[in-house]
Each structure stands twice: as C-alpha cells, then as structure tokens.
Image 1: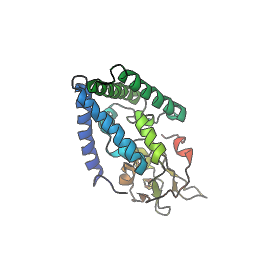
Image 2: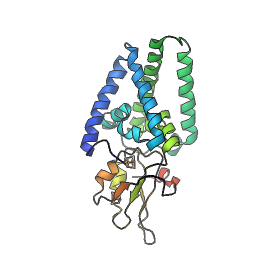
Image 3: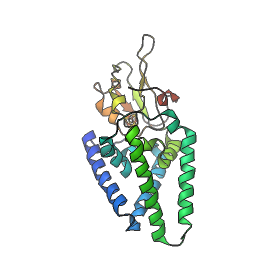
Length: 240
Ligand code: SF4
Ligand code: SF4
C-alpha cells in the first residue's frame, strides 16, 4: 500500500495544511456558502475511496482529521473512547440523524445552491464543535469513531489493507498502540504460548503512525486481500 508521504513529519505538515483549510471553512462558510461544497467533496471523496482502502482517506486526506489531530489534540487527555460510544447502534444512529438533518434543512430551499452550501457548512460546523467537545473527555479522534463518512468507509472497505507483524521480530513494546490516533489495540500475544500477531480493525486509518514508530520496523500493511481473520477484541482491549 503506497503512502502519501515519506515520513510522519511530512504527514503532520500536510495535516497542518488540512487544519488551516478546516479553520477557513468553519470561519467563513456561513458567509461564503460555496465553501460548504468542499465539505461535500470531502464526504464524496471519502466514500469513493472507502471502496478501495477503507478509512485511508480519514487518516491521510480528511481536512477535519488533520484539524483534530494537530490542533484539538493539544488539549485532549488522549484516552480511548468507551465502547458504547463507538458501537454500531450509535454509529448508525448518527448516520441516520445527520442525513435526516441534511435533507430536512436542504428541503427548506431545495433549488438554491447557496442554501445547500450553507447546509453542508452547518453540518460540518456542528459536528466539528461536537468533535471538539468529546475530544475534551477522550481523544482528538473521538469524533472519528462515529463520523458517518468514516463509518461508511469502514463498512465499504474496512477489511482491505491491514497491518501485519513479523512475529519473530516484534518485542511487544506496544509503542505502536500508544502512537495510534484511534487508540486501537494493535498487538496481541507474545505470552508463553503465543506469538505476537496483529489484530485489525475496520477503523484503522492506514495512517502508518504505528509503522513509523515501531523500533524494530516489523509492522507493515499487507497487500491485497484479507489474510487475518477479524478479531473484534481490537475494539475491546483497554489501554493505559
Ligand atoms: S511497536 Fe513494533 S515491536 Fe513494539 S509492539 Fe508494536 S509491532 Fe511490536
Ligand atoms: S493501527 Fe496504525 S495505521 Fe491504523 S490507525 Fe492506528 S496507527 Fe494508524
């Protein structure tokens, strides 16, 4: 799987750019509704790319993802979200609610393109404020656990391109898990009777923070089809 950047520094620099774009949209979208169409572009791009590589868009191109990781993380306690928050029921409820709100607000003036731009801006504004609030309790990417675009991507292609580990090389230091913006439990095993292996989650953003920080460079994204059976423990294992 090809990365968009050469190093994590490059990824972070790009995210500062995304954060700036997000701030401009949030600050000016109410006055210039055309900016709201950038939100639509992000949603559409995310969903289309979801077919190919799951949540890769979230980890590499999402403007709000960059904003959350680079700016909102500055005050977030960086704790995992509780399981109920990212349950399928909550996620589907959020999808239904937000699409309903888009339709309801859009129907007030359905033939006015400026009005639709305003509606997309408003949805982005409200959900970003909500994301900033939940980040205060858990972590900067807490919103991403229930973001409708991210959830749709995980449904569409979440089982493609996931992590593998070289069992003989991993030293079970768990640095990868500490670096994961989604607080996923990446490594299991390395007890007396078990070798380390990766657990994969459909919520993996394919951001490669874990790959980059691994001191023995043993993590990599497998190519092509699913090889490791999904183990939902990745969502349930508590982290310190
Ligand atoms: S950072 Fe590397 S060595 Fe450490 S637990 Fe993760 S995969 Fe294993
Ligand atoms: S598991 Fe690795 S690639 Fe996936 S979201 Fe976490 S840090 Fe990023």
